[in-house]
Length: 370
Image (tube, rainbow, N blue to C red):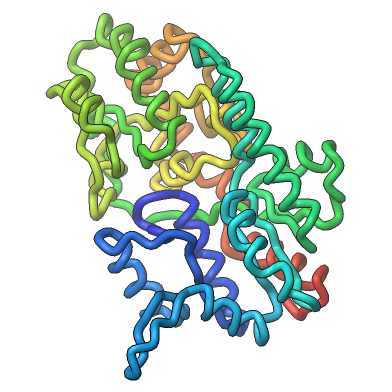
């Protein structure tokens, strides 16, 4: 179930829904797996904004109507079936493939799962045959989805280029990225800010690796020069064993926060020490929304149109280099102000207007009025 207050992909999904509704489209949402204890509030939320959410229910005559039954009925009157992620495509396409004559299929890759896993291999002690099989599985599922569908959505031009080089027709790939808009944040002076901030969802392994890298390799080097710099780690699903190991006054694991504004408005530096991953990093876009200066890696900057020392500091994956950039940005008010003032420049490509235009182009390609 999409949870827009918990992860970047869900936030993007919500913005896509808003754009489609604004342009007169009706949305029916079906999810592969529903968790009663955690997902019910989000069902209520999406229904409150006019999205029809398919859920198992019992009729007054005690007949159970399953999600699959509702999907089978909906297929007769929908025009477009928009499927997210490779496992989602594998699940839903196998159920509906015999019922979709005349319907248009959109495959939304969200990010390239196999690419993220291939990059992760560099940080694994032993790449087993089982893991190689898993990567092959995802790659095959992703390219099957892309080649089977009528249109493909990528989250960045970089990933569009990657898959088009691997044989997916480029004219059917459309970039619909994250959506970011400036936040009307409290203007807190450089001198009154403190601490280093990171945010993420921790069911996502690149975020776990980034926190480990930050705690074990980067911050000890920072603390050698300035032991007073605190780190604040936000976001849901942080593993309890790691929390017990890492949490301290200097490295605070704060978990899910209903509102994150305070942290973005009062931290001095946002860090994204990502060593692998794919797609576009919503956490960096969020920092830019708040005009909070960023230190990240090349992987973090991918797809974001960041310029080193103008809109962010971009480091390699050497811990000392990353630590040096944190210290430089933390102590140099002139540099901090430069990045702060330029933060909104990269967001133009992530505006609602830009993504709405890209969605309209995709719909027109499929033969529908945007």
